[in-house]
Every structure is written in structure tokens, then in C-alpha cells.
Image (tube, rainbow, N blue to C red; front, side, top):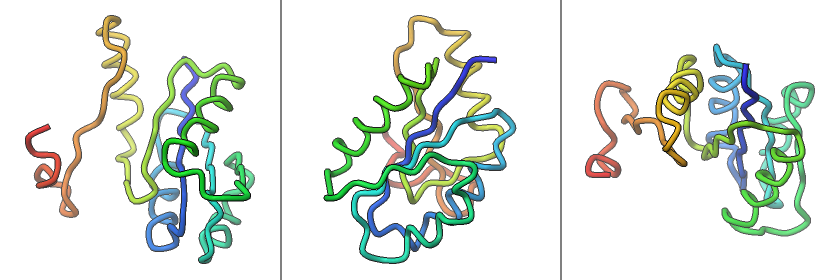
Amino acid sequence: MEKVCTVIVTYNGAKWIEKCMQHLTASEYPTSIIVIDNHSTDNTLDLLAPYLSKIELIKSEKNLGFGGGNNIGIKKALELNAAFIFLLNQDAYVSKECIGLLVTALRNNPSYGIISPLHLDNTGSQLDETFKNI
């Protein structure tokens, strides 16, 4: 089984992070989870505390932005010999099949460099308006 590392950059994500983690830790395909906290000032870190045995938490001393946080996570994932790196927003929730389906899609299409899952709305039954044409 090819190693997948999921990178999540958090910044004041208390509103979303618990649901994100609940869904991600229920993934049928195993993933190493790397969370980079961009110096949150809310209780994001408190909400991540129950997951500390399941994640690698990297605390930044300042807000490096989304790109800077992802760069740290990608570097760590490569150090962990990840075959695939899944960048996940703190306010996104994956289905339990999501990562496995993405790995299968990449295996079946070796010329692809980057893929993304569908972005569904809160009901999970239709495409999110923001991503409908992408």
C-alpha cells in the first residue's frame, strides 16, 4: 500500500477542525496526518489535543500563510517517504472512501501530476457552487 500523507494548515480553525479530523481519521485508506498550525489564537490546538496520538502537529511561531504552511507540511511528508501528498483545507471534510479513490485514480492515470476530489455542498448531494465550473 502506497503511503499517503495528508497535510492540513490550520489558522483559527476551531469552527471546522474537529469535524475535519473526525472524517479524516475515519478514512478507509490509511493516511499519516500532518497539521501545521499557523499560530492560531483561538482554541484550535485544544480541539486537536485528542488527536495528538494520530497526527504530527507542527506549531508555527507566526502565521506563514496557506502556502508557507503547506510547504512545511509537504517537506515533512517527503521526509516520511510519502508516495502521495493530500492537501486538505481545515474546513473540508472527506468521505471515508475519498483518499482510496484518489490513490486509485492516480494509479490508473500515471501521467496525472495533481488531482482533486469533487467539492460538494453541505448536503453532499450536489457540487459546491464555488467549484461548479472548475
